[in-house]
Length: 411
Ligand SMILES: Cc1ncc(COP(=O)(O)O)c(C=O)c1O
Image 1 (cartoon, rainbow, N blue to C red):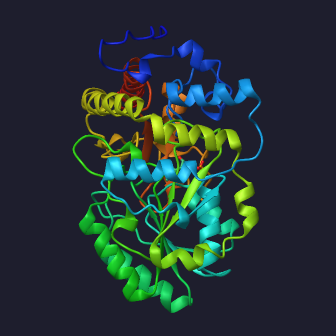
Image 2 (tube, helix red, strand yellow):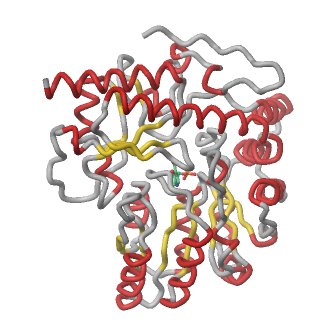
């Protein structure tokens, strides 16, 4: 396919972030999205976006590099920027920087918080299909995983959660629930009513809740993000600019403790705070503090891509069922009606880059790399996750190729 031309800026509106970088330029990137597959493959798998940095982030990094400001991080600017963003965007004033801690990234933060709340062998409930590394990190941290699968519409199933909480409490003294809010991969943005019900169940069964809110700034028009800590005082949340401003390579995240969890946070070992990098902290702070205009342009472009993806699936894969996201930049596609080869029965832990079933088919026959549904746990098999944080041209080409390959197979 031809490379996209960088898009013009429409006067008065920040340019569409997906039209600022060409496919040829993207292919010169060295990150995992661009280095895992050969150049004829369109990579729509791992959660990296095809964007340049927000100007505020670029300027903060340039300033640090030009002045040699590359020492250790200091101060509270990052949690303060998160607090201001939360008040402005979500109407929530509950982030008190005194009840926060810096951690290198969200997954490390989750593990460290779970170490405060649970012991080795204790049960952590997850709601599959869910972000695949939850399984590997929990196993690595010597915690047992219990599944409370989402319902058929890709949302939290309160009955399944209640059963999982009761089962977890019967098995151990200190169970926890790792909530994904918004939910990766179905893109569900949990409602206040859903979260209040979760909080009530958790209290009833003595389950502590850790809420992964890495996708929180990525809530698309039509719904509102509800921070878990706005409904429960004893929880923890993990926040980061990593997904919304594409900063995964600049490690820094924030743990936020609810008022009743302050005592737990006080037990966080001092050395955990040595992990985040100063450049990461500067970049994430600039994103939350000064990157709102760029984020708005991104959300508008994602909303358009979401509509485009719906049209493309209807046109090229009409029998497949797409769950278009309310939040995140991930589409969740049920490919079972396409009659593609299924995943092989597997034993052991799937890792995020495993490809099987429909994702393997689309890589081999359409040269499109997607995330394989089976790695997301129960309910994931037969699905693929599509990263739609790319240009409309790449999205169109990818779905056209997928449709052609599926049609060629069925004849
Ligand atoms: C739900 C969720 N949590 C955590 C992460 C990883 O975050 P980090 O790189 O900060 O550990 C991702 C990355 O895509 C994610 O989707």
